[in-house]
Length: 68
Image (tube, rainbow, N blue to C red):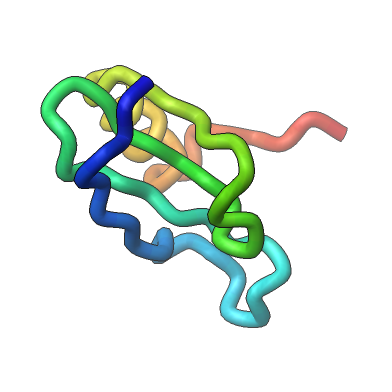
């Protein structure tokens, strides 16, 4: 997946202490990128924009729960 031109921003849901931060790139046409802000050269997860919107909406509304 070519992420050339991605503009990364820290997620507003990231931990302020920096231990659990992710960055997202939502400026590309057909893909949203997600990466660990502490490992910017590491792997990137990619999502279809519609899937990312659904996930972010569910997370923001509290409809997601962590598995124990």
